[in-house]
Image 1 (cartoon, rainbow, N blue to C red):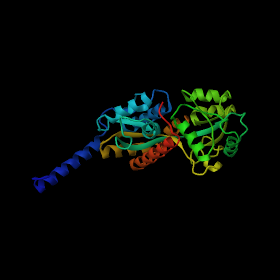
Image 2 (image 1 turned 120 degrees about the vertical axis):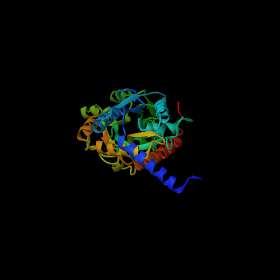
Image 3 (image 1 turned 180 degrees about the vertical axis):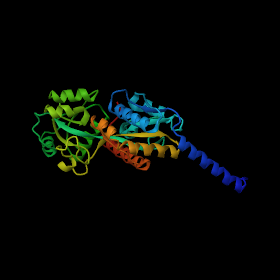
Image 4 (image 1 turned 90 degrees about the horizontal axis):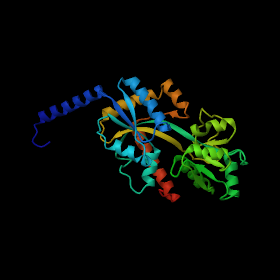
Length: 324
């Protein structure tokens, strides 16, 4: 700082440090808004509300969910991006907002890698590879063999173009060199209904959306897309251990803040989220919906988002997927 006496500069730096420390100790001093870019009732909303309740209980200030759905999560993301970076607006993000939409659309009003401060993962959920019982396959190896013997004949469903289930299936097709036509639906429930009815043969579905049907035998779960088997379905092998080494994909949900939110605030929230992920009450609440509570450091989340952004970008370009 030109012209400032050294002693004054030292005093100024000390005062800034004290102010930052004081802010960290008093934060939060009022209600905190948690923006969710989806309508109430979905998986992201359920997780956000569970985590908000846990933070409210742990910290003693109200964390409330503000649902801002629309435009493939862009409305909520832009609102969160433009909020003051004071820690009183947080954003529940996912691979849809931070890794898929920016690669799928020609232009979005935010930069997923620069406009948000990562805080922590909140939860993950694998996809189940499920088939109609009439399809003569019991495992992934048999599905691959059948698809190769019937190119273009085995149809798979998804909850929509560009969704995690759609891209998980396309990653599987690209990795295994199989040809299975895609039928997109306007939601996971409609797709699962047609799978149960035998109108389509395969689906990469979130566990929460098809768990009941698999338990009743109306559809067959042949694999899970996570790196490790799920405690909710330990009998179901992973895709990787079923003959597709290296294959892994999960739905993930995380918490971020607007860019330039102070490090002390990020660290405080991260510490509380790490502790919350170990809460038996939260684990039970999320596990009942098919989610695994997760937590990590801000650096780990930032690195993970970069990897996912690059991975989905490469896949979307490879399959020539365009936003419709």
